[in-house]
Image 1: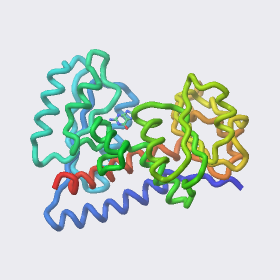
Image 2: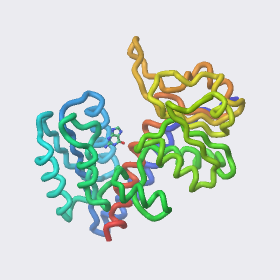
Image 3: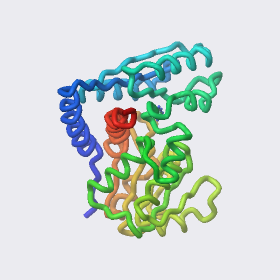
Image 4: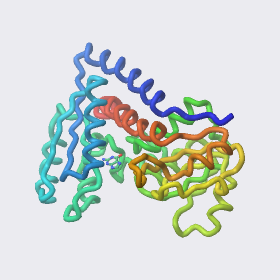
Length: 281
Ligand code: GUN
């Protein structure tokens, strides 16, 4: 029987744990505040930002929303970040990606104070993850580790294959699996014999950005498959990077889309917001 990894349930569990912690912190006079910046009105970003604000509200974290027009200049955005960096009452700063083309993403992410970078995208936080020092970890890969741990799926000594090498998912995912003593291979669009490599995986993390690309022939019998992709197909239904119908019967465990990895990203963002208080002290 294939186990369906329920990200929605685990995310709810984590959010409830955090809600309790935030209530305790409030009793000690500690308030947590997250600033969320969106530039332009990319519909997907609006949905994600809305979910983040809703999660803050549920947990008891104050959120400040900055909805800036598409034509906002880079300097103006950097100035806002500078102000938020300096505000003692703001613990976390999140700039929703993607940014409009005229704004350099790298410059913006570098402007966020590393101790307020709850997305874990600042090079200092990425570097800390790389050398095993304390810091914020990118939410999606951190959420995947939580899913594996809370489902008691052992990582140590396992063949872990990551498809995709983005700064947000693939690379930090590889580092986290390595930290858990997995044997890690990172594959990407130039990998030769991809099927051969992925077929070795005990744990296969797919973050390739192509709808239903990973079919049963890429997957070893009994593997654990984690699908990071989220796409809308022609009839408006959501699907992942994994062809769920063909792959699920072959796995020991799999994340569905929706309801797998997606909700975990938000839960881990909330986790990082709560952690930010200790990091800032
Ligand atoms: N765009 C897509 N995923 C993310 C994320 O995790 N954080 C931010 N800030 N933007 C995103």
